[in-house]
Image 1 (tube, rainbow, N blue to C red):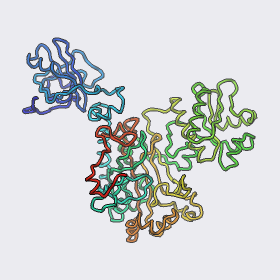
Image 2 (cartoon, one colour; image 1 turned 135 degrees about the horizontal axis):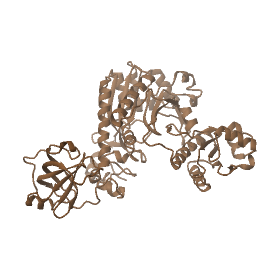
Image 3 (cartoon, helix red, strand yellow; image 1 turned 90 degrees about the horizontal axis):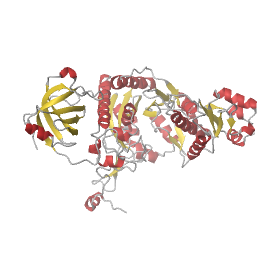
Image 4 (cartoon, rainbow, N blue to C red; image 1 turned 60 degrees about the vertical axis):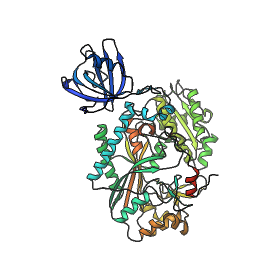
Length: 589
């Protein structure tokens, strides 16, 4: 193999342009492909910036020409020469007007035939690509995603530094505390039988930093959660973690809005108008059936309960009498797409997430087709149509159940129907805040009240008298930032009053012993003067996914895990030998 002695890269492959013709360059990279046309050889050389064509012809020294003929795909080479105009231009490449007339070529590394071709558009199954992730990452699309991720990190650090934030680090090996998901635990060799946990977030530590007097904290924090994976979830992820002292809700929202505006301007070239819209949790659920609503299209949920009450339709009447409701969405111009067969599929989908069934009004002919026709008078149908804005060509989908089922099911149907109709606009970013979340929610398994966010969240002032008597009506100073139906960040104002914190622990059913065991050091810190403070954790991975237009977090993570939380390339998780287990005091059962 050749070496790089006397060779120094002077340009990246994607940089030369027509204005540079005549300049001499030294470029380095991987061979995308070689085309041998007899008296002509062209090599497409690729690096992270793009592709540059290398040319070898009758003017090329014979030994150099023969050397170029030995080059194969994915060889690593360095080339030196003069830039000239291409005779056959390629409008699809930024460098498509020029080529490098090579006078010196060095083969730095040969390559075997790769398991798959390095192309952006590929049908190779993901399992194989992840097994050879280091090859998969050579694809330009993935490289662009990770480069954009790095740029987002840069903007975050610059913005918060300019606004007086101090970048601090918190521990990775911590004490296990309840935060909603399962912890990844790490056994201690020194303290046999005891375990560290990997942090689900730096929540407690950043609150302690506020108590310590660091009034503005930022960290690009690695977080870990042992939970079932999906397209927008990985077991390890990064938060842009922010905390501020002597603030209330508006102060934090304004700070994050400034970051969003700066980020979208620098990274996407988008002008985001601030302040961003705000919607309460209750309103978001009532209108969109989701606490992370996609507002790029309409189809808002409409309550029909007062119209259909007493209609004689047992499904509707039973839901209303049971304290639930009858609600609907109206899909405009959907009758052609939502055939009876398609509505049957939607019905099965609704049942799959807990609904008892799906009623509908499909207006494709002169008269609407109503699934509950014998319970609807012409007058009632007219009233329903008027409220929904239902016209010829439209379809209404109706769910009757308790609100905790009706709203999320219609929210899911709303998203599915919008995708089927193709009404979700591309290249549009609708940011909004969802605020005033409930403090408590019922645990589905135990029926007990638990904290929707975490037990350090500050209740709203008007909720304080309701904590013990009506916990279901207590709202929190909690807020989420949402874009296009994706939750980007979650945060809250924290409780800084020791007595109120004890009251919330009591309302959550925690005993003095449990409080001491789980949060003792934080509770004790509150005794020594805690400033009003709050913050957010911005999901960096999801943010990158949205801005890159990627379908999965795996497309914006260098070495991701798959559905079963394993990593195909390295084989993690792996076995540990008996000696290591013995040192840790662990016996596998």
